[in-house]
Image 1 (tube, rainbow, N blue to C red):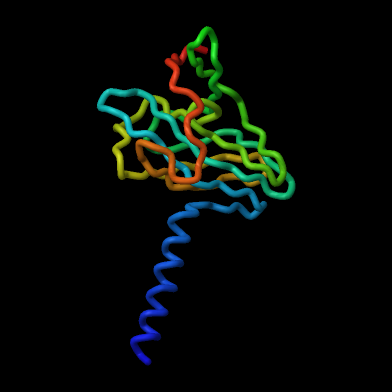
Image 2 (cartoon, helix red, strand yellow):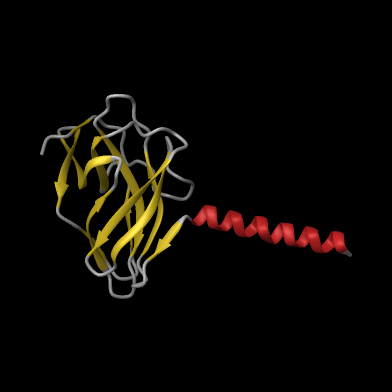
Length: 166
């Protein structure tokens, strides 16, 4: 009897742990949710890195106004577009998050840029990022550094060359 109870408790604990890891979401009091924040690894001397995540709007919607982290001198919101088969990044002021809708910040589209990195982003590490929303205020997330998107998140839209000209 004790064995069955211990096994059942172990299975419940493992299931809860997997659910927490898999969802990796932060919910603000407004109902806005930030899911699966991740960044690509960088190499020594690389000055910038990209960050990606999914934002699900609460009942009233919201707007991402900016972000900050200790690992970079500044954080910018960016979008990418194609111009003569070259992907171009452009800084933007904000990202609208419609009520109840998901907005994906993914490679090849909207994303966060970590400018003037203080240290390389190494696979397997993580760092704190504070997102600043119009209604939800500051939402803190833990960004995982990994070479590919977490399972179930949007993949890169294109493998074209890009530059950082505005």
